[in-house]
Image (cartoon, rainbow, N blue to C red; front, side):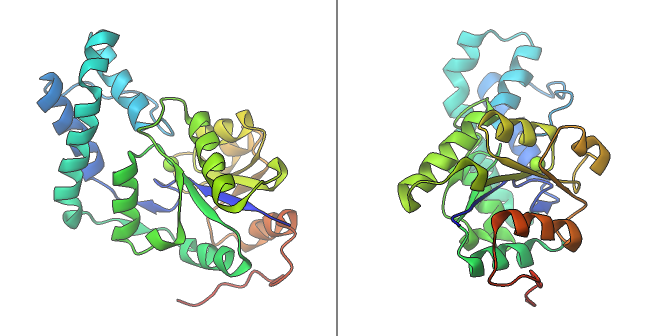
Length: 240
Ligand SMILES: [Mg+2]
């Protein structure tokens, strides 16, 4: 059985990035001259491009004005983040490395579906030593529509590994928007309650699987069964 696992980053694999937000703030100031734009409500699971458009239109900028500066704005974000990433105190969430190592051992390709701009995504993963588990993805600079990021990630996986059946593609994230993006693509969805949403809230999205966290061995076993992985039926954590 050929499976594909696609992971969100923030509050799914890691927590504690502070400079991502500051990078956006600085870039919006430099490019559009806006000091302290109002925060966008309910932005969990939005892509960076989506957050930028929402932030700027909320401040009264029209689409043409936003479009004109958007590439420069994203580039400024990346520059700022790159310069400050060394100061980040990012924490890899419990169980993440075990899950990634197990998937690797099972030969399950691993990709990203993240709202992060691509360079920022790789810098964050590099910072906590899990970059090498991932080879491709769909990223927040590519669309304001998260479901298109899933599509991009799957297309990239297909180009590398060949075709996957939709029932063997697992999108993993911590928000209802992650689940919806997977559902729009007709793939399996795994929601993990390590972010701002509870197990109950995530269950209400209709996600195929909901986990407390990546130490939730009993529920992880259900996913292992769905993947028909039989090399290591216990899915026993690999000690790092
Ligand atoms: Mg997230």
